[in-house]
Image (tube, rainbow, N blue to C red; front, side, top):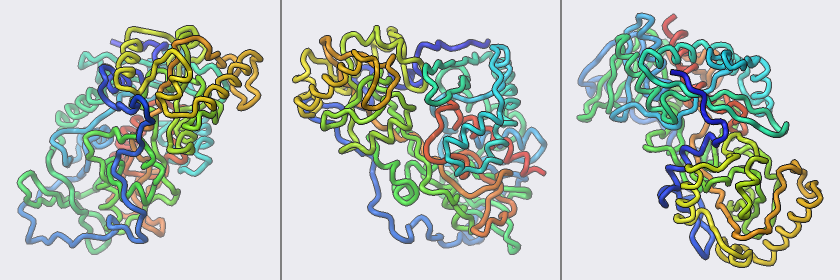
Length: 530
């Protein structure tokens, strides 16, 4: 069954509810004081030669207890690795997939497409080249456009295949449509969800398809080192089984690294993407993404992508309802600091520049009437529902949403100077009356007065999802050495590979990260089995 999602609910509301309702999750606001930042462990200043670049001692053949052979060895069982294993096995290649966890890993639930059969039925027909142009503009052209075009021209057919698989499994495929009210940036209606906002459903479907096609799975088997022959070709992987014994998995054709990012490796974050440490929480759970594929590549002579720093995906995930809406925002000095009508990554950037990285979204009791003015897009909500009411109640209980009767009390609760906050709100209300934002240039239709009690302050929590940076690869997803030469027999896909994102995650294509993962998993496997 195909179902179009409710376009009046924020694409992040599903996760926000689970994180704030009932006081669970990111209880970041505490009455009487400002919340603390950066609970995630962070390494000290990076050394000139960080430990992860030091190649470990080579595992000797005599220490290997068992050797297994395959054509393709895939490392990592996210949607990227699952798609690679399914593709290779379906094409007739003997395929082995290694995963260090007890099962596959998946999170989120949005998957982007530009021209799926569902979209075409809805009358949505996006030009892939035009979308890639917007993506490269977002990245200041610091990306491999060949990779982005490879995604753009191939992913819709893969999405259609996934839709057909879902139908055969009796799964619902839901679409989420957004409605951005301004022309500040485009945002395409790209989201597809399989059985709901739970990527585990899609991952489970891919696992079943891969096993049915003949792929062999080895869970609880972390890869430790890549193996190269005298010619420099990668010929396999040495992994450790659940009992601690080394096993060697030879790959007649190729090894495909699909181990995800390094968001739970503080040293790599500090070295490649220090901005990813300036957050309230790391929400990638379980914390298995420790840069295993990138490290194994470096140890055999691969290069990391040249564009640095790498790209953090930082959103206000888990924040109180409406914190992503363009209401007034203030810092801990009680001052307004931006045009609030910006995409979530840009909102996170400006928040990280504020004192202590702390900011608040302010609105009053008329918020329900004001919401429709905001539009529905990435992390915005434009109407009340039972779900958002529950989310507000949970956020008030947890302290991430403050509700009071006076502005003086509001200032005290969030720990900002009362005089400064009241002056900021007085100026903001003056601009609302004029219908023109003379200070920051926000769309006047989104300017809403703050003058009717009770008053609300939502803490804008900053959550790291992943770090988008990886090994240097070409548009065929072959891993490259520092001289930009192909390392034979080695491919990388998904977040293990670099050169696809720069600056910030482009929310103009919601669901792109997952779409890129399973598309590049497919394309890497097709190249490898040649």
